[in-house]
Amino acid sequence: MRQTLLLLLIISSFSYGQTKYDNFDKLISEANSLKSDEIYEQAILKYKDALEILTPNSSTPFFNLAECALKLKDNILADKWIRKGVSEGGAQMEYLRKYKGFSDIQNEEFYQTIIEDYNSLRQKYFSTIENIDIYLEIEELTARDQFVRKIDDYMNGRTEQDMVNAMKGWQDAKENNDTIAAKKYQKLLFPKPNEKYKKLQNELMRIVDSLNIERLMEITKEHGWQERAWIILWHQRGNHDEDNYIWNYFRPLINKEIEEGKISRSFWSAFDQFKQMMKSGNMGTIQIGEKPKKTIKVNEEKIKG
Image (cartoon, rainbow, N blue to C red; front, top):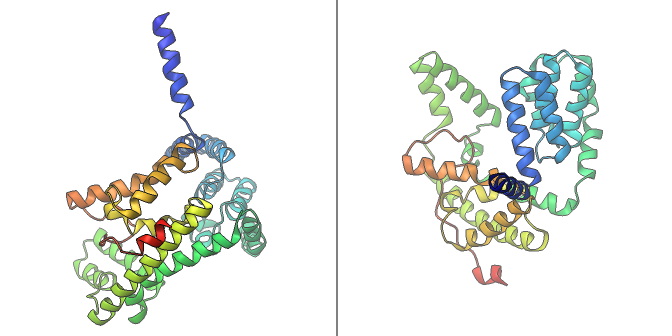
């Protein structure tokens, strides 16, 4: 009897600590595994259960569900969830067109109709945003963040598509052990930096990162954490578990939101992986972001005020 009571208390305690994100993440993980194992019917059920719990800041789960439906030759179900991926998940046109699972339906009539309806679907997504002004400001901060990190590409005339093509060519060359082609594509992907542009880029990065962090702190104080601002913090990832004024502000705030079920517990996983890679020297398994730089310095008195 005592053992049974103890077990019930443990289960009760565990259940009490669960958030909607915990349940969502668990179901999505199970769905992804079932999808990988080609058990599409069960994967669809798991995705549906997860998406009933919350609407993620991503269209990928919606599109994954639609891809499972396509594997089962159910275009009607696929159509429904592709549309939801835009109207609820906020998929941009580029992602909609380039999602790998939709490569075989590009010329299908129902898919072309979705493309034609894209603007109205996207408008539905924007109508669900609680504070559109803050949303657009975070988008602006993110655009600045990305712009300064691509100055060398812009000045040398390298487009996004050039980099995509070079990456594909490099990966193919490596798979085929074509060292000559691999070196050619590697030079395109990782060119020797132009010192003149690099100096300008580093200075602009320092200034933009400083302004972005300062404004993000102000926004967060007034409106709470903005999930789309993740990339701005990502560029401070090298010291995310250390004591400094940036992380001493954001770390407890984010941890509190995690415990309250407003953010997924997986938030820190990429940061921890990066830190571990830096310690081991084994770089390359995380495909986002850049090498960490020194923590930027902004007006701390203004932030504290």
